[in-house]
Length: 153
Image 1 (cartoon, rainbow, N blue to C red):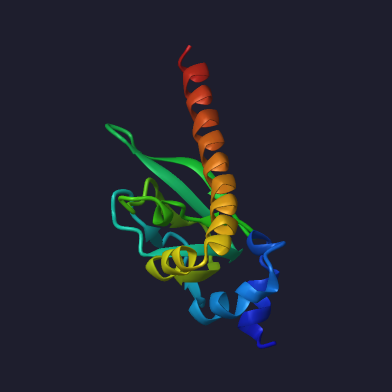
Image 2: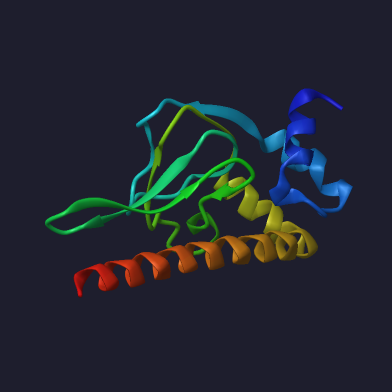
């Protein structure tokens, strides 16, 4: 097992995934690094990558008129960045900015969609994991909304 394969197979996002899927996942994976403050993705842009955070932290921000960016959630090691790559129209819903030096695994989103389409069992595995990510993002947005309204009173 090479180093990249070990990193891919150990990431919590893929925990419980049948071993037969890892060769294709490893072949499509790349290690990427982001400097503190670097924008990884911009709200409204096309999603071309899916990331799994290894080290560091990433702030997910929403643009609020007359206020600028508001952090909705901060994610870190073991978490996934990006769910919009799986659902049309494949546009980022938040801006993602490295809060500190960050290292992640990255995949081309079109390639992952093709793998999922070619193997429905793999697609199901990905969909289940991405549903958890969506649920976390929805809960974070809910919490931010409640906090905003509580402070406005």
